[in-house]
Length: 248
Image 1 (cartoon, rainbow, N blue to C red):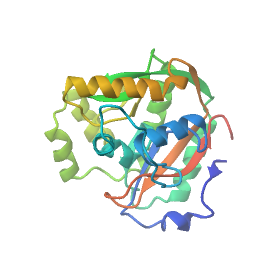
Image 2 (image 1 turned 90 degrees about the horizontal axis):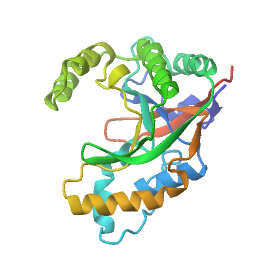
Image 3 (image 1 turned 180 degrees about the vertical axis):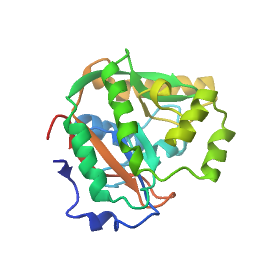
């Protein structure tokens, strides 16, 4: 059974509330050292919702750091396994949680190694070497949870396509509601938005390396997978529940 973080489901909204979105993420367990570092970097704790003072970086103002981390802060310190979706009509949060317990109960804990890498013009914590176990788990989650996903709207399709997609990504978008699944999936924990200036990139890169040095290229155990929710498109994502791998 998942480790509940809420006394009951009413604390995050009724089952027939279609306005919220859910997402399946890897995120460090609340109160862990990695969770604390990630929350401090982004300026928000996604388990409590608390706003946190960000680190001081020479050459970058606090206002600029807040701006650079705005989008990542909105989603929380995480790596996406199943991108945000609305619950399909006829499904419930209870059924979603039951399915997640089954899916993750059939999996086993494993380790990954992370490093600071560029993903386009943004920075993220990414795998320092390929890991087939996280790839496999992500594929299972996409397939098994898709029955709970409300189909993507024409408006959402247009927004995604406007950013430019390959034929494979477009097919994924139509079939699974998200372009970056299966062979397109790249495990990453987003830390910044796009940074255009090379000088600023260098400063931020060094700051991230220092901030997360305790965990870079070290074995990090993947033992829990999390369910996040936002109540509406403007609201930040918050942790709802976590599920232990291998626990039936």
